[in-house]
Structures are given as C-alpha cells and as structure tokens.
Length: 177
Image (cartoon, rainbow, N blue to C red; front, top):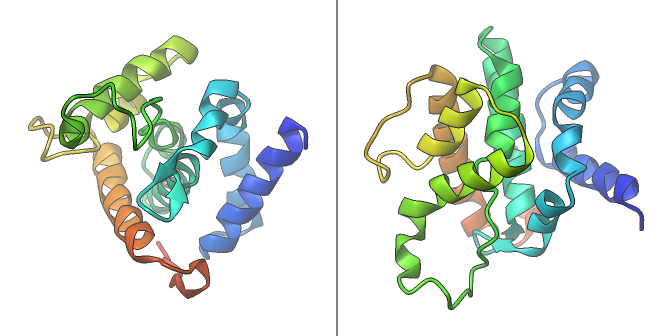
C-alpha cells in the first residue's frame, strides 16, 4: 500500500470513530493536517501501541479532530489547534522501550520530546507549541497559555480514557463535540 492510500485509510478510520462535523469540516481538517501525515517519521507513530487499544497516530488524530471541531464551533484558532493537537504525542519512544530508566516519568517528559521532534520537521506557531508542551497539565505544572491548548488537554483526556477501556472498537460510544 502506498503512503497516500494509507493516509486515506487513516482519515476514513478517524471519521468512522468521530461522529461530528459535516463533509466540509472533514475536508478542511484533512487540508490542514495532510502535510503532517506525509512525514514518514510522523506516520511511523501508527506502529506504536498507545493507551492499550490504539496506535499513537490514531490517538493523535482523534484528539486533533475533536479539538479542531470544538474550537471551530467556538470561533477560536481551529487551524492551529488541529496541527498542535496532531503533533502532541510526536515522539519515538515505544511503550516497551528499555532505554528510559523510569518509564513512569514519560508522562512528565514526553511533551518536551514531542516539541523537539515537531520542531525538527515543521514550523510551528505559538498556539501549536503551547498545545504540544502543555497537553499533560497538571503533570507538567505550567498551565497552558491559550484556550486552544486547554481544548487539547480536554480531548486528550477524553480519548485517552476511551482508548484505554475500549476492548472492542465496535463498543466505542461516539463523542460529539
């Protein structure tokens, strides 16, 4: 399967899971985020298991789309939140990586790892950076500066919880923003 076909399947799976937004919203979200998904290193997140029952890439797509849609409905900076939320877990460490001596501390340090990895590959504005760096608040102590970053925190917690307890994807209850 080529990369474009894989990206198309990711979007299809995402839009099956989230039941909010119309065709125009979904198209706009794809337009805003497609360049991030074209990055090979970012796409590799699809191979890392996350929250027990999904991949880190799918988790990031869930958080990004719901953050985008909610911010758009509130007339906030939905373009920045879509990109910042998609990059919020962009780091290479897998769940069983033995190179991190205290894996339980990953919750504290992975936002900075994601920020550094994101900056290696993409130009980011202040809101996008804030979404990435502060998405683990209160674990990261410093609260977000922008309301859009607060939305990423909210959707990250919602999707993380759903993904941890969704033993069978068919039983996932749709989230409507």
